[in-house]
Length: 370
Image (tube, rainbow, N blue to C red; front, side):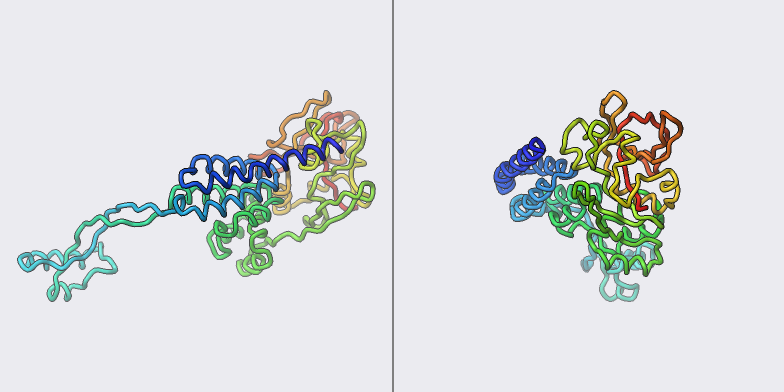
């Protein structure tokens, strides 16, 4: 516990100490390179679950947006066509060209009609005009902010929303919202739904209802494990109530944190052997069985997948692997005396797969209400 507290305070101190340096770089008129690098680093830390980094990212964005030099629009010359009155000496030829233009499929909304060509002949002239475009820095922060919001775990969506504001979030009337109704069982669509819910809440439900979409924003509750007073978020999937946090009850000698780091337990939950997994859940809940996973509809399975943190596993020799890339969940169902059934999900997959694993392996556990 002391080590965990020390590490938490240490990393918080690192982020806190970095704040003045980041703000200073982003307030300078010539600090674009170092400012961009700092934002990228904070974004990476935020994606990994560091909420202090997310807060600092938001504060840094505010500094950048006040930097007039970095945010100054760039004037770009572009070619365009404009209508100009013909000179007297070219009127006859100009009238013919004018009529030809108005009678062609090229017709523009600002073109004169055929009758007007005779009264005041005009011609299309190519010209270069200067138009303001967003600065490279504005394009960068908008692109980065959009990426971290939509591609971070849904549990961090509200943190990112508070940090970046809603300027990069599509409206609920946009094409993005319509995609929620198109294929709601798709993993990407499910992830999109959770992030839309973080941004719009109940108003999104009303929009989805108007589209006759079979999805709604999740209603998330909580329970407390009386053994250690740890709280878990819960959500209904189909007819059953599941925890959407991995079990994290300490069972000595039969459970462990990934790489022995207590911070990983806070992020991913603990990893349990098959025997320990059967005692990992709070009273009134049990380790999900093979049948519990089978009962998830494609729509429920997609929603469940969005809640997954890729916490890896340890093998029978205690060697850890796959954190950030994939996760395995024990079920309460055994194949035989030495192997138990699991469900696995990888970061690039769209479905939960079934396999059997040596019972000595350390895997994650999700709990289902009895």
